[in-house]
Amino acid sequence: MIGIIARMQLALVLVLLACSETPAHDSWISRGGLRNAAGEWCCGEGDCFTVPTEQVHITAGGYLLFSRETVPFDEAQPSPDGAYWRCKRPDGSRRCFFAPPSSF
Image (tube, rainbow, N blue to C red; front, side, top):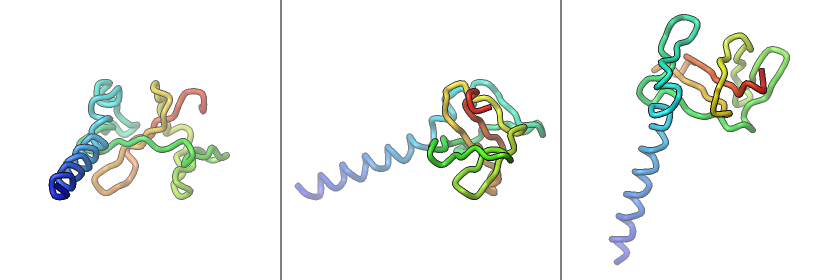
C-alpha cells in the first residue's frame, strides 16, 4: 500500500514539474511572436517564467530582479497579464523581460 502511494506522489510531482515549464508556451508570449530589441524570439523551449512580485524592486535604474539583476526600463516590454516575466537564453542570460504596464 505504501508503495502505491509513493508512486502516485512521484507521478504527481513529475506532472507538476512538467506543467511549471509549459505555461509560457501556451500564453500570450508565444502566441504573440514577441521579440526583443535585437530581434530574438522571446519564448523558446522552457525559456520564460514568471518572476514573483516580491522579487521585483523598482529602482532609479530599472527593475531589480532577485536582488541581483537590473533590467533597464527601456528594455522592459508590457505584460498584458499583469505579471512579471523573464525569458532567458540557453546560457541563462536575459532574452526578454515583461512588466505590468502600471509599473512603467
